[in-house]
Image 1: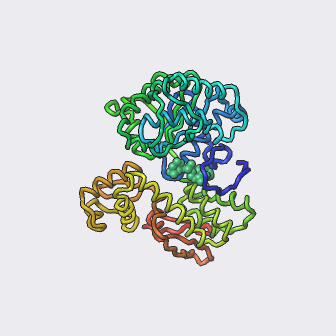
Image 2 (image 1 turned 120 degrees about the horizontal axis):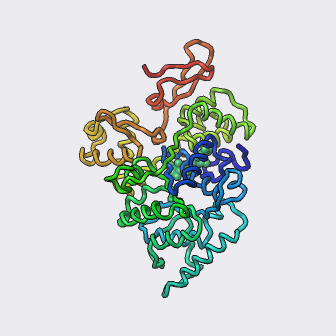
Image 3 (image 1 turned 90 degrees about the vertical axis):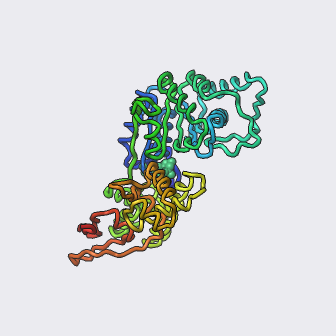
Length: 427
Ligand SMILES: Nc1ncnc2c1ncn2[C@@H]1O[C@H](COP(=O)(O)OP(=O)(O)OP(=O)(O)O)[C@@H](O)[C@H]1O
Ligand SMILES: [Mg+2]
């Protein structure tokens, strides 16, 4: 890994050399993409799904990287965050704007605009001018990856399928980030039909990457014939938190980058309390470099991660009832495992609402159900709670220790202390 930027950044990464421990996923993703047209990137919250998608776009669009990774053709990147896009109609508009503004190209830090890129941009402009009545106006806000409210927008009279057909004349890679958002769209069925069309007919030249939450994607891209994609096989990559030893390596590497000397106590405590989550480790590392105070850095990292986790939860259902979502997660964190009936009693919520919300949370991969009881699946949601730390000491009396959030004990069966000895915390 060569580092040229801020090591512990909380921004999405678009450079494959800045993705720690994802070499296999990059190779696998490229392989799937080049051989087939479609790739799903799924995984736990804040594990780097968007970053992996961006890196693949960079590898397939930057010549030097393409050569290094053995990618034979160039693909123009179109990176679309579906957060804030409300329909297929808006999506078409967003894609067109993204191409004209060359937004994704710039996002991937491509400095020179090649002839291929110019050709695509000019063709889109020509296409637009062919629509009578449509006033192409460079002063309309160029909306880049997302799009705001509907008011005052001129929609381009082009449907998504025609746009896909048009894009087939060029090699493009379209990233749909946060795909679960389409669940809100009234016209999602026709959008899915168009994606099936791209899958069947356009895969050689229009590559599609979809990232998002776990089971929502499964609902759309299941290989069951009865489901919407009718048995079409789609390759997926699952991103998890780093295993403990890799997370330790990452923290050590980062702290060394900032010339901060630390002992194993800081490393182990940092890793166990952040569950090896890439984003969370970055928050912790950033604050540790700043404050050199373990507890303070952990607390701050919980705050940052907590606000991300809350954002994720409340975006599920447009805020209405969002408190109930958060409360269900919180009560499960406190109590470990509960049935829906028990949850509804604990947080004073109607059992029907509880069942509905629990189902959504389950489909998003936040919680899971085993033998009728719900529990937390993704440790990112531990950050919703103000942590209370306990210092664990080595029973062998060698001075080994670990600072651990009490709630984190729900997650681990055993932990390794700073002395290297293992301590069982669940029997
Ligand atoms: N492999 C990695 N090595 C180091 N840092 C990483 C890695 N992957 C992601 N990160 C960092 O983790 C954070 C989250 O990354 P990213 O936004 O790509 O994740 P995500 O899974 O898309 O998150 P979300 O669930 O919010 O959509 C960013 O700060 C990013 O820099
Ligand atoms: Mg993301």
